[in-house]
Length: 192
Length: 192
DNA sequence: ACTCTTGGCTAAAGCCCTTAGCCTCATGGC
DNA sequence: GCCATGAGGCTAAGGGCTTTAGCCAAGAGT
Image 1: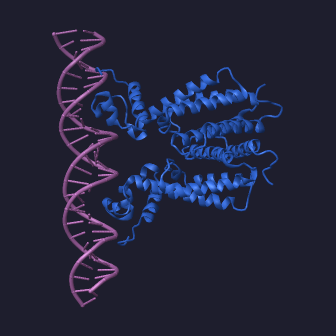
Image 2: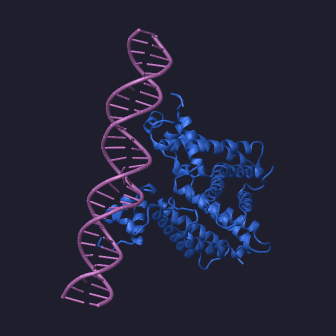
Image 3: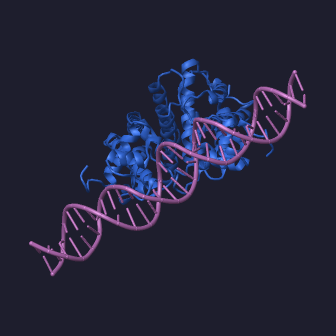
């Protein structure tokens, strides 16, 4: 890699590669430096420290999720939107299980934008249920909790039994949708 | 601490103390040794290595959760049991937020027993919905995903907005219960 | 052509885990 | 009562990681 070819962005690229094969523990500055063909201290010219690199990686992952989920939800509404959102989210996690384990949830500036974007997407998906303001926020939190919980458990191999996970997730999607209907503003349906 | 006062159990106790104040990153063999008044290598007489200590801690936390959840569910059934289960689970996580972050989900022998116990408890709680075999397993997975997702996000401070978290969790409980009814065997109610 | 910033380097300190090998006490059999 | 034995401590040491300090070269701009 020629001089000056290194940037925070390319460093995050390399970091994601290491995480994909080797899990979260494989993300070390030494390893990233090795992959970049550079001595470890050189990385400090581009990144403050390991914690910041983790935050940057986290932000990148969240951004990718937001992209894919946003694309999936585009043009749908109501139940269909919820299904698309949940399906796309899980699809990302299945494609990159290790990445999901490095996500940091504590509010950091780096990920704020991606988080806000996801919030917007989810809000749009739930609009058809006619919830307003805080009702929508509570509903989005529940949606997020369900998706996140399933994703974490699946990514970390927490489901031991042989039962088909797709069926379980289908059920979860149905449960969420049923729950949204049950708590939606009266007189609204999932598909207006 | 007198000679021979150290055992895997007391080491896990000390480890939990460190985690409670200081987060998951505070769990190091050096720190545990310091808390035990012992040189770090001495710990290896009781514990194979850091990975095993983590597994032991994880098993202990899971066992405590199983105890508290089991106690809460005792004597209830149907919707009430589900509500009690979810409430007790979250209560534990709120009491010890840092502990929840050290949980390992990959199947390890240490935690298998506690996991099986929790599965039994959940199965009993869902019995009133009249699901059998794999239907029950899928339902339990959804319940677990919802609880776990909310717990993780709350413990890690993932919910940024000021809206009341108790309300959100109430909604989640209602959503789960609604979903269980929607997917329950026909002709059954939450409270038989 | 000269300068100055940028981005690399080596050296080194400090923390952590882990292994190896020793020593000391308490216990149990004789 | 005595000694062997093993459990449970210890120090020493190695290797990996992060991070700081300080140096040096390459290249862009004037």
